[in-house]
Length: 528
Image 1 (tube, one colour):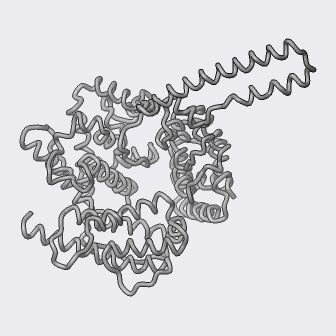
Image 2 (cartoon, rainbow, N blue to C red):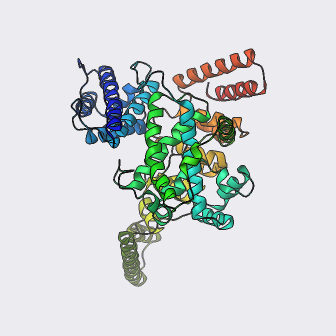
Image 3 (cartoon, rainbow, N blue to C red):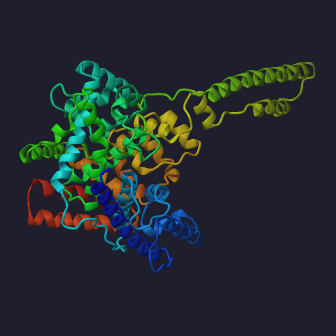
């Protein structure tokens, strides 16, 4: 790291810390914690923990900040990562790239918090007046083409690639990608998150891509390069989503993306120069304005068709029909359960035989016989829902529950629900689009298990995009709206959205504005 580069990194980092200190005072004030000035990240985390104790838990803190449980967890996770990387800092101290990335990630978390809670007004600008929007657009494009190039290099035969994708995902999704994409190019029909998933899946990464990202100085923010790459690509997915809806990126997003691009592209560029790959990141960056505009036009069109790239980049690819392998403990439990079941049957048989011998030699009234025959029935123990799942080879896991929902598996879904598994409204999105009414109606019967706080903003946004892409407001979707979105605050917000859509349709009457007005009106009519 050269002296000028080190100075630049330290300057950016100190700017991030200044933003965090100012924001921390304002956030703590909202949580009834008064501080004259902000200090280091560890101090901020300690003060947040004090607010948690005073308010009665993280749920109360999240409510004050207008965050749901997942957003609150992510916010504190980012802060913990930052304070681990920077336990304390003195001005002029050397700063690593990982420390800078951790600080920038938390600044973007502060931006999200400010959007959720309008009472917060702090500034998160890192470099006013120097936002390089076009450069950011080029970098996201280059990363996407890099992913496609690496996958194509691992699977040069298109037929074998299609078959491999069917194995990893399923045939229906592959057919959908082929329909959406260009002729004989399945990757062009995949969303960014799906391409990223192909790279960071544990088995796929170790088999095809690990050697390309083996640079010991890159992708070291988290415990392993693959996990770091997964985290970076999921953040890039969200930045890409902002670009596809033509939203201006903040300076924090642009600087964070610049650091991500360097961490991802440098190892691949070195591999290209050494002849270990044909993928050339520098070549992807050498694009003129016209070609860049064409790329993002196609991306925006795809975004409108698919309804947006809403699903995070996960740790592994989970095929919907895949059944989780049994662990040794589960196999032992299954065998033990079978043996005890056999013993139970033998005991019941012996008791029933003895009872028959007694009653056959000394007849009793029918009523007495029935009363005495009851205890053997009571000895039979019905296995719990969790035990039934275990015997089926399905672990008690949120991912397996979501997979059952997505594949319309009502039996497994019901066992999870009967066992007390909580669920979130956002988990129904894929089933809604696929028309899996059976499993959706089943989940509605367990609405008390739905624990997502303030789920309707995302649910209505997703539904609106789906309807704009030709999907209908089905009876099941109406039932979900009525069940969860008829609270006054949601109705008021939807009325406002309808008023805004009506004004746009009146000031700029065209097919798009009128269509959007009718969508907002249809949703409002259901929940008002």
